[in-house]
Image 1: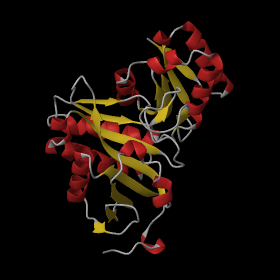
Image 2 (image 1 turned 60 degrees about the horizontal axis):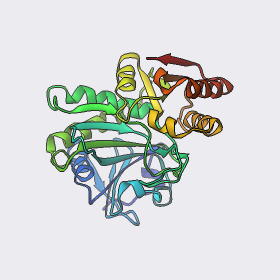
Image 3 (image 1 turned 180 degrees about the vertical axis):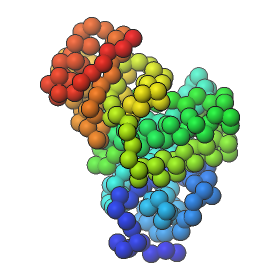
Image 4 (image 1 turned 90 degrees about the horizontal axis):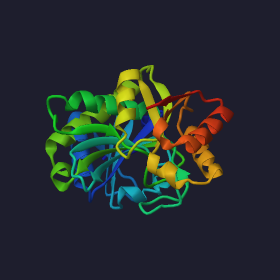
Amino acid sequence: MLELRKDNLGENLVGIVYSVEDPAGRGIADFIRKVVVSNEVQIAGSVTSWFIEELNALLVGFEEDVIHFDFLDEVLPRVSFYVVLSRHKASSAVKSLTVHHTGNPTKSADMGGRPKELSIANPVFSYLTLRNLSMLATGKLEDFEVVYEVTHHGPTNLLKPLTFVEIGSSENEWSYEGAHEVVSESIVNALRELKLLTDCVPTVGFGGPHYAEGFTKRALRYRECYGHIISRYAIKELQEKEELKYVVREAVIKSKPTPIKAVIMRKIGSEARSAVIEELRSLSVPYEVID
């Protein structure tokens, strides 16, 4: 078993984390270990832990469900950002590979985290993962939709950026090795590419449905790398102008590096659109309104 020391951990250590009770997360983690060389290590509180020297990453499995990973900063203090491997559940049963950031824009916090709190997003890594998912799914998982999801659920309190990468939407997909393979290779490729300069534009999005197809298409076409995406239904719940402006500010500030652009869906309504634009102007963030 490898002993973790400061001299064998480089800077910008990555934490790839999952629940051992989740077949999707566990399956992706197993495939990552097939793609790259890993050495077993011991991390307090974990069920299984591995160090991947090539990626300077820890691959760690916990018993808890991923939406309750509020403790990561304590057990992985040296990590610079987190990648959460997870299942995605939807009543529509649409086969999907999704990428998203976490947070509760409204007073509701039914799925972990705190009300009206957003986590720190990781736009560049998330974009690279989305792009790799889109490329690798072609010809292998043609019946899977590759898409950003909007900001939702916990954890919200972590001090490091985190990204959820998920397989949806039923037990069949969660246990499908073909999906595990594509997601694992996409994450490994994204971490390798992260060491290189990327010309994507850090962006925040406002509006649209839960599956952010419009923002996904823009990301892949225009190299807009999205941090937080605040859905149309969340904006509708934020009826007070100051509440909405607070969420706009949080979405911008909590997307690292701080966005240099915002994209607003026109269909959020004129009053909401005006409030979003007013706050973006106060933050000196240029914006684009689209249909």
